[in-house]
Amino acid sequence: MRLEDGDLALRPFTEADVPAIVAACQDPEIPRWTSVPSPYTEEDAQAFVRGGANERSFAVVDAQTDELLGSVGFGLEADGRAGFGYWTRKEARGRGVASRALRLLAGWAAREHDLARLQLIVEPANAASIRVAEKAGFRREGLLRSYLELRGTRRDVYLYALLPEEM
Image 1 (cartoon, rainbow, N blue to C red):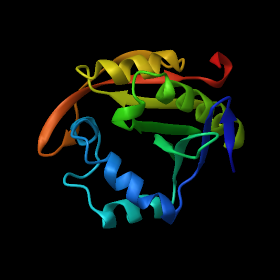
Image 2 (image 1 turned 30 degrees about the horizontal axis):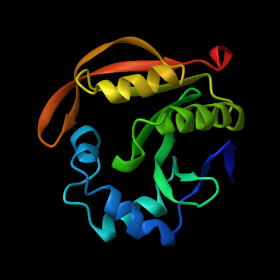
Image 3 (image 1 turned 60 degrees about the vertical axis):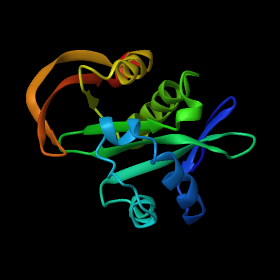
Image 4 (image 1 turned 180 degrees about the vertical axis):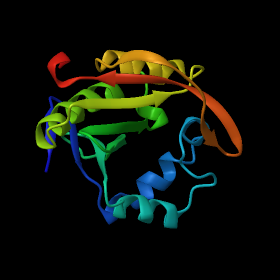
């Protein structure tokens, strides 16, 4: 499967992506806001590429060069819901890569899996991720207090959602 949006493409990760994933995840901003382990190892990247039973992650790449720009994925949940997540390499930030990739994957996932609701969570202090979610069409629905434990700390998150009819 490959999805394209002009100069941006989404494709499944392969073992060949492992070195680029490891390099990207050395950026402290990625584990700061996500569940990505720190320090991040080759074994972590290999496990990420293998994925989970109800999870689908895609490499966000330059459509012409196949250079890894980031990752976008989702996990299927009950009742026609899916939870989305993303990260972008430091060098690719500020160019709309994450919001374009999220929008592209959201549309495909909604159709492919007959989703009734697409959602994601973002920490209130993560202004860049909030911009990504909103540019991709997700709407903030509320604050979930002490919702997430990340690295031993309970954190508040905003819940964002997108319904198929809003795409």
